[in-house]
Length: 139
Image (cartoon, rainbow, N blue to C red; front, side):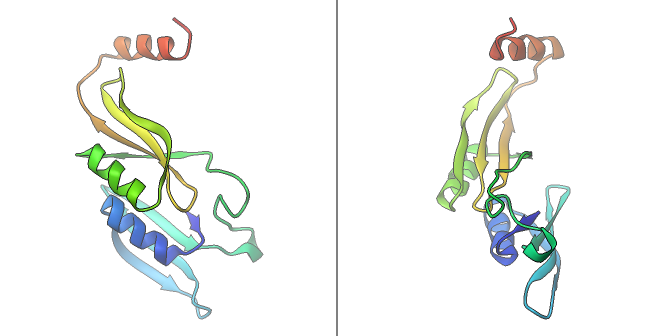
């Protein structure tokens, strides 16, 4: 993930999502080329922008992230409030879904979209398919 300010982004992901930083490499000019964060069994790799190599964060490039990272939370409401208080913006409101999840999306201060979700109940595949068809006007 390319960000304008990998040090600040690492701190944000640690503070808001509980990530743990495992490694970093700083170049002689002070830019970070490698910041390794561990987050609930996944690894995020961050780097500062390197515009001279075409590596810029979504906001700097004039576009939004085309992907959404999903984070399963034990208390999604608490993480949601913490993310918004730390500068994230709401992309899709947090709500209980017919898929058995409490789910919403934020855009973090670096332009990346995150789906924050908490499992509420088990839902069968057929029930999920019916709910999806209804939500997207295919019922």
